Amino acid sequence: MKENAPKLVDQYGRHVNYVRISVTDRCDFRCIYCMAEDMTFVPRAQVLSLEEIYRLASTFTQLGVRKIRLTGGEPLVRNNVMSLIERLGQLPGLDELTLTTNGSQLTRLAQPLQNAGVRRINVSLDSLDPDKFRRITRTGKLAQVLAGLDAAVAAGFERIKLNAVILKGRNQDEILNLTHYAQNHGFDISFIEEMPLGLIDDHDRALCFCSSDEVREIIEQHYQLAAIDETTGGPSRYFAVAGNSARIGFISPHSHNFCHLCNRVRVTVEGRLLLCLGNEHSLDLRAVLRKPGSSQDDLQQAIIQSMDLKPEKHHFDLDAAPEILRFMNMTGG
Ligand code: SAM
Ligand code: SF4
Image 1 (tube, protein in one colour):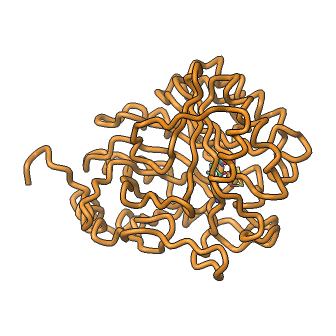
Image 2: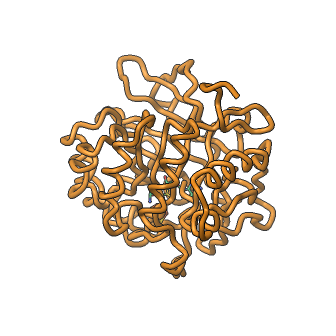
């Protein structure tokens, strides 16, 4: 193999250069689309240690991964997570270290994150109405998240992106408010279609489903959207509004399949390498990490060989019984 040839290539020729790592399954919120109200979390012994996460991250970068996103659960509620982030920020070969957060800890951690080398963050925000926000997150306080976003602006991140999952009957009427807020603050925003991950009893996913096309129609009543001809290698399709550099995106796992562009894999909180969000094909990296005498080469070879397991595409079906029983907080969104 040539020195610079991509090492992580699947059987469909897709080059994996992006890893999302779930650093905890725990969270201070209980969003209705993500978790059950009464969640059982993974026993601590089964969760990867910060040292194990670091070892995996550095192995992935040795194999050509250029971007790492930390997620969860809420990544910023993990004890000592900043010590991990500071080390990851120094990893040779890594072009981008980023994270997805619910924003609850940002008043405290926005500046330390910036100092550690994080340049862009995604913050989830589904409503600008405190009561609706509370009903969707079950435990979240809107004011705390908005203060966190102010702290992120003050810390000087290059880009802040909002993520909003839109559900009919819950926050469909927030689409324009959220868009105005994002545009006025210079934040990108992505509207996400709900995915059937984990068994939830709060709502019927098929009945609450709001497609990206429906969201877009609502936005287009007020904004003229022009498609941006730029592939981010990710699932978002982005649009711009004249005179504003903040982008409006749509993540549409149901209505627009993006699997052919997929450049990413995920590591769950238990160290399972998931080759696709919508399938169970996986490799137990924790077993490799914890096997007595396992070498760096064993870990690299296991990851390289796992590429053959990456499926061609996901098959989400909101009307069928959920095939994917793991919750999003285990997997990392
Ligand atoms: N706690 C952090 C947060 O909320 O941003 C990071 C983890 S969260 C699982 C990552 C993203 O997944 C969030 O933007 C959340 O809205 C989204 N998400 C969670 N469950 C989802 C589901 N069933 N369908 C679509 N998106 C979901
Ligand atoms: Fe927590 Fe994020 Fe899941 Fe909401 S979406 S419950 S904030 S992990």
